[in-house]
Every structure is written in C-alpha cells, then in structure tokens.
Amino acid sequence: MRSRSSILTGQELEIMKVVWERESVTVRDVYEALLERRKVAYTTVMTMMKILEQKKYLKKNQAERAYVYRAAQPQGQVVGAMVRDFVNRVFNGSAAPLLVHLVKEHDLSAEDLEEIARLRRDK
Image (tube, rainbow, N blue to C red; front, side):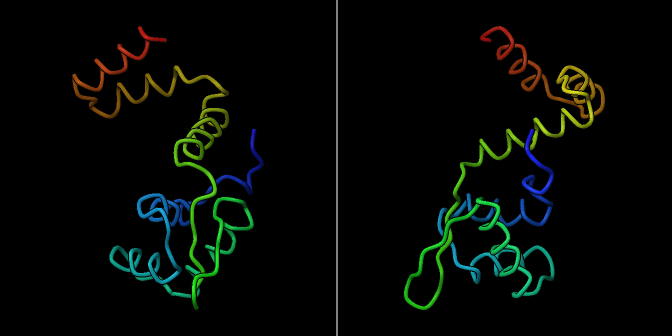
C-alpha cells in the first residue's frame, strides 16, 4: 500500500484532473481553470503544483519564461492506486462491500449494472 503522503488530497486531485485533461499546462493555466469553479490564490496553485512535482505526480520543463507541467503518471494508474487505498482502509481490502454499497445507495442504471455483469463475465 502506498504511504499516506503519496495519496492525492482533494486539492491535488483537482489540479491533476486539469493536467490530465490538457496534457501540458502552466501554473497560470491551472489557476484559471480552478478559478472558474471556485476562488483560489495563484500562489496556492503554484505551491500545490510544486508539492505534486515533489510527490512525482508532475514533471516540469522550462519553456520561455514559464514552467510547463505534464503528468508524470497516467490518470488510470493514479486513480487505481487511490481506489485500492480506499478499499483497503474502508473495506479491509475487499471490493465486494464497496460494490454492494454502490448498487444499494447510488441508483445505478441498468446500463451500469449490465457493464458490471459483463466485466465479471469477461474476467
């Protein structure tokens, strides 16, 4: 299991979603994208992106006067690690109770349930 500090916080995940969506970004790009959703300080975004670089989620290169950031890890890999961490912490490593909870509590569509059944058959 990954150490707690390597799992993304809510703010870090929000930044990573912008990076994955755009592939390469500057701090200003991320700041402006986040500003459309909520009030955030430019310096906060800059600090969070430095932390993400230290955690090895981002890589940066100098381009003219600004750094350009790219994801160092694919979205599927990061999300998979976060889900595994969640299942381990909340459901003692068993995904079945999570699936039962989702089916009972989140009004999954018939299509969602069919996809789950198909995935189970294909596995």
